[in-house]
Amino acid sequence: MNNLLENKLNLETFNASSKVWLFTADKTLNDSEHGAIQMDIDSFCAHWDSHGVVLKATGFILFSRLLMLIVDESSHAISGCSMDKSVAFIKNVEIKYKISLFDRLLQSALVNNEWQTASTAIWSEKLKSNEINFETLFIDTLVNNLYDAQHHLIKNLGSFWLKRVI
Image (cartoon, rainbow, N blue to C red; front, top):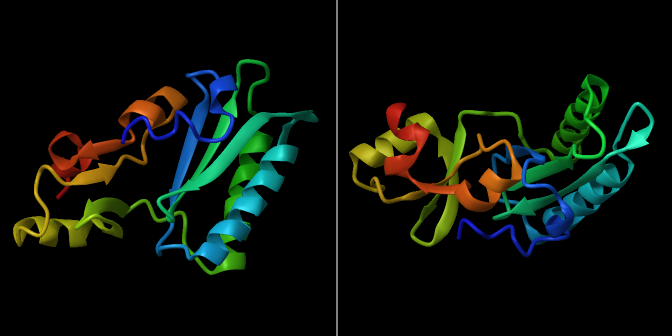
């Protein structure tokens, strides 16, 4: 499962050190939302620039809840202004689709073969009640480069930073 990004879009042309940003939605996106948001991501990435130079960027939705933006800086570095553009884009997605994407307390786990998103407090309760355990798979939204996203995006709770919090 950790190599799930290998065949996604055109990532074989992206450097392994490409920057990755992950945003967890506070709800599962339905098919209509998924398609519409993907079109918005594609449009944004096609025009995302840094000081007038279009960035080599892509993005997509994973597990109907996780928005991922990727920038390959091997040819042109991302700037503060271009970062501001990505933040504005994500905020616009939040408004347009009535979802929250900046709540860093939300984590997603695979429970009963379904991805579920909840706050760290809820995951703590689920651990105490044995609804999840240290083998439960979580999405690590703190990965920051393409290699780590391809190989370390999914971790069991026992090897995940969240275990120290809950």
